Picture 1: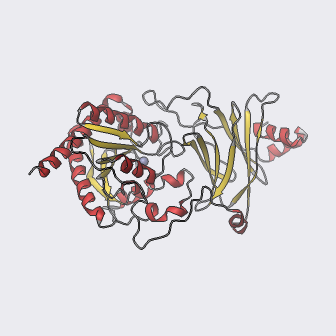
Picture 2: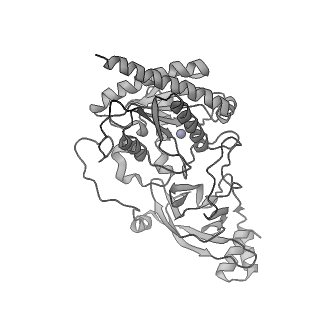
Picture 3: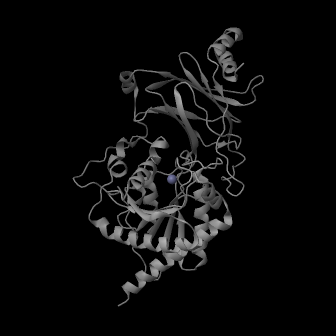
Length: 429
Ligand SMILES: [Zn+2]
């Protein structure tokens, strides 16, 4: 008997035989697991006291789809729904995810699933749904009988769009920010700290994705979020070794960060340069090479535009309600103050292309432009580097190899050095 059916019998206290019939009628019961990482790229190790999710299943029934999480100790949780696209979000106290979990399950009303840390102290599951749904029931069952784990059970059922809209409450709704005639680049109340001439330049490295937003998956099942964090740490090491820079990472663990918060972290810290690192995956497994992107309202080519749209979906993938941030994330509008920064970004991008070209294969037209939300800091030169394609065997191998990552980080570090040397030369009286 499908284990979900077993739970169903337990909960409903109905005869197991009738439940078994139900199970025969809908024989869908899927075990799952989640991205595991290669030997060289380990996820942040768990604190022993943090509850661990050891299993996730989806059970399909005539009137509902049931999602069950096995957790080794109790958690608190809440659920809510989102639209555009329709999703169900389950937030719970911080948990870790068993390394056994791979390829999250789907079925019934659930067309996709992601899970991970949403913010320190809070983990999240995001379920993509076939259409408007409601959370019919959500509860925890303590261990009993053969079940040694706590089971967090969520039943979702179809609903009409009208009923969905009636019940739809926006979560974490902040007070409305009045629209101004000028679109805000980033709604940042933080003032950039004044630069001290004697201070080392601050480089902020932004490893893409994280937590509930895993990014792309490599051919062998490694998530982009782990690969780019490993690379960011390597780059930090390389920059610090020059003795010329201070370095900060937007995230140094497997946690989700909103796109606008990545910019805010850099601005608040007074960054002099912002480098976002990613590693995309595409349908054509033959395409390989590094590419460098800077901000532009109009994309330099079709691929760059598509890539920006994909990377800009990060918040949506993590179950963030985008209704409040249509100005700064969905639409990329560039204001005048940003032009100078964009020129500087392009100068740095060219230095990167030069240096990276000495060590590895580059994508043709290596420096490209598109509307990347994460590059929108109005006063910090910003670039996004797609280190390579996780869909390509050689690129994946390269990115999972610490020695090769080190070489690439050294090349990027050399570009950073050259960029600031040029700036210094220009500023000399
Ligand atoms: Zn990415």
